[in-house]
Length: 369
Image 1 (cartoon, rainbow, N blue to C red):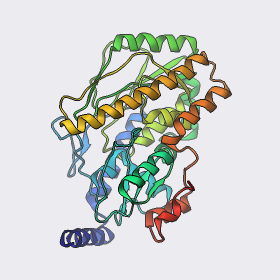
Image 2 (cartoon, rainbow, N blue to C red; image 1 turned 180 degrees about the horizontal axis):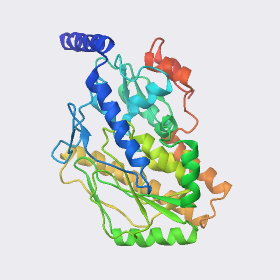
Image 3 (cartoon, rainbow, N blue to C red; image 1 turned 120 degrees about the vertical axis):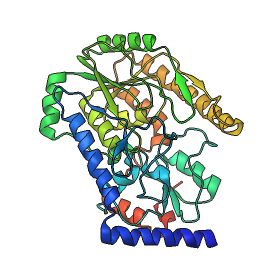
């Protein structure tokens, strides 16, 4: 009880400071990252590589020597709400101040496909969870006995960094384009694969799909690979604390016609949401959980097992369609992904504003069972 009162008092004071002094460090961070992504996405020739440095106390610094989930942002009570700019996306969509009173919500910042996998546990101040899909929301609600509201794919709330004119210009210059997103490492979980075989598979997909250009999207934590064809575009969306991270991804997806991957990850549903044709890279990633505590490793092993099962189902659908991307295949793929991404759960600005302000019971925003 006392800890809860202290926490509420701290954030009330911080909110008042923001109201009168506009939290200049956080506004400075938003401006700094805006400049960083603008430079990357408006370079000529097109080279959308956002630095993996992060803005910390008034300057950019390397993220290499920092803890995996470190973030200097102080916009929200829960640090993970800042990952990929999720808090910024929702407030912008709801036409709310980007920096102000903290949200009384926990934002699930990615994809989980097994019942026991989790991001954060309820906090004394949290009134609800926001999840992508209805199945995930039901699991969370059953586990924590707290409202869990599905809001659809996070990418639905992102915006392209490019003007419509610049996007048309780039699409004309690049032609039919394939975006490549491989399985990547995170925190203490390492994922490895045969990059040479991935390259061969992508080249086969490129040839069969008549793609003139390829964008190879590198995760900020993974090393650069020098063996790529020189005419491929190498992209990076920067560190996870980049508040415009998903705007960067939306920009790349709107420039691309297809998405090739070997990972059942968040980007799959994002690609489908952005009307991309999906391609499966038949190169299995190996996962190393040796750096996790045994209890964490057990949960991640189950999550990985379920992702492999879903990957197999998706691959069968895509292989059976033989690259045609027929209406029937799109319908089947959407049905497979929908419980986890919730494509029809995207909220209007007005409804999102009501959810974020939590001025009426959040249980009223739950979808019918």
